[in-house]
Length: 370
Image (cartoon, rainbow, N blue to C red; front, side, top):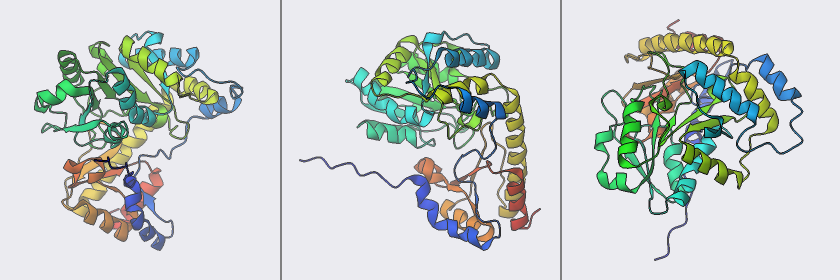
């Protein structure tokens, strides 16, 4: 039998484009809270470094310049009190490309395995990366508190697993997972664990954690400057952890030219060395989460809580597509139906509090609950 060719599914956020015209009836237009795109400005010093590095002429190192990796190390010491060797970290062109391409590199490393494990409610690129690599994408059920239910993983799937993804604080739910348990499970079963920690700077309950606090053997932490420093358009992330895994990925990625542009790497050094702008951004998101949770709770009648981390509100509404259309129709506000993040999220919606404060305040006015 001839195998069927792969047909890319519709990109999730294009499925809600039909609701965007509802924003035209409002003088200031659509308020888009569907995608986690930062709207706040990055620090002026970062923009200056981006413009004046003189690093645009030559090819930048794929693994990241020494100054960039040293800055990553300094940030990890300040944030987590960890010393990670410079040769156990490397740059990525934003973390989405790292997530989306990882399964194909891991399949080449372990051709006898073919399965990617990931949370059943999560960032859709975990599943799509597996699909694009011709691998099995196997979702893991969630615990009542929202973390991955490790004891629900079928032993047969564990034997075939190339890797396990965990995400804390989680997208879309904002849950704070037990990263120590995930690291222990991976070591027990011989499965590399990749921990997506891109929202760690925005942790509201307790302190931000990293899986590397539990040792680097068999684990890799993945981070991004997109959210931390409002640099989503610059495309800069990094990964750090297990010496053998990082070395393998650094080498294979060199061969396909995965290089963060030199000026972006220079700007990344400035951004990573500055915690003050992160504190400012953290307070912005905290304020918006509290405000919008109150506004939407009063308008909808649903009990909406501030998450453990991240900058998304995630709450059950029943018919998520009906809720999404009603909010767009009545207030010109666009949010994301929960099935974008897995079938188990079908009763939920995700609201990204990324718009400036004045736009968040305008939502309350439009809904008549200001």
